[in-house]
Image (cartoon, rainbow, N blue to C red; front, side, top):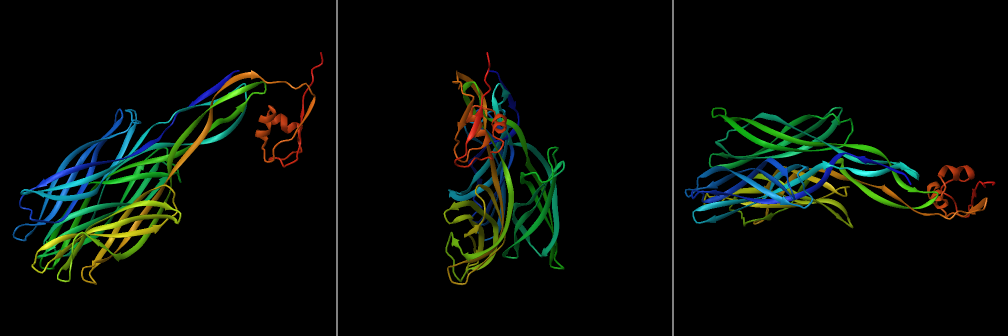
Length: 490
């Protein structure tokens, strides 16, 4: 029995990994009380090897603190890091795309020094060839069907953006943090368009008081991609590689002009659906046939759901507070969230967090971490979640309790997976018994289609249709199928 096979050669997302690594930074003895601490991290590379992915970059720590004389000060340090994530699937031919973010940060004192430890989470996507062999024809009766396979096209680029705006008079900028919110991922002919905004959070000193404010700075990437077509699905990641804030103060007017400049990096992937004319089932009219099947798996992304939700409520606090404390600033807003699927439905559940800076009755400052939980219903089964916290404020209505409110900008992008079962190979078995009757009557199972009936009768679908032109498929219960056999006269 002669068979013909083909090989599909494509490129796609092969696997996703999640890794963590800890990065530590030491500050000197001048730090008496840490008020707020921030860590931003950027990757400078990610490589796939034998059984592991190595990623490396730089973490930037910034702290605001009081010294022994209760003066508010700032300090910054950078630390290079390198880490590996083990996985037996990984091999050098894969392309690793990764994005790193600070998931948690802690402070401890050892002797005269203060140590800041950041737990960095890294989301890794691995791309590579996705090849599979499938039966395409031969001496068999086959069922051909168009099978869809998702292929990937990687793009990347860099851009700069900035903004100028005016604020009240500031004495000094102590700390700033940037959070990226992607608002649109759109494919046009020959390009992937990525638009969004950077939420710039600034902590500043005004006299002896701390103040905070936010600014949304828009950005746009036009990433060339020959495979991009209007309406195609895509995903993208945008990272702030560097940020600089400059303040020009005018004491006479009591105002301050701020200039913010950002260097951005974007990595995107455009997904294309390719149809493969493959054999999904086959049989022989003369011999028993043993089929070997293969599964072609591919993955991409679906539609993007965007939600804006206002949340409020009582917060969990990392330390005590009372009416003698003066609330001064809310800064370093961020969120942790996951998609939760339960019997009661699907939702984005998480917590919005920030640093609340207060001044005590004795004039000293301290920072309190506040956490506000949230739960937002969504319609998604498996999705990537990102949340931007905007405009968070806090107040103390009852002594010892903090109520907060904030606006959440939630982006939900569903993961999409396609699995196709194809005939990979066929082996010829024993000869089938041949009926010597000229006509046979067959009673099929109700619901059988033309292919299922032809396979049972070991006749081509065309022969079955020609012998039974009045039968409609799928067949109904009680219907009969007539099989004619041409007799050879010796």
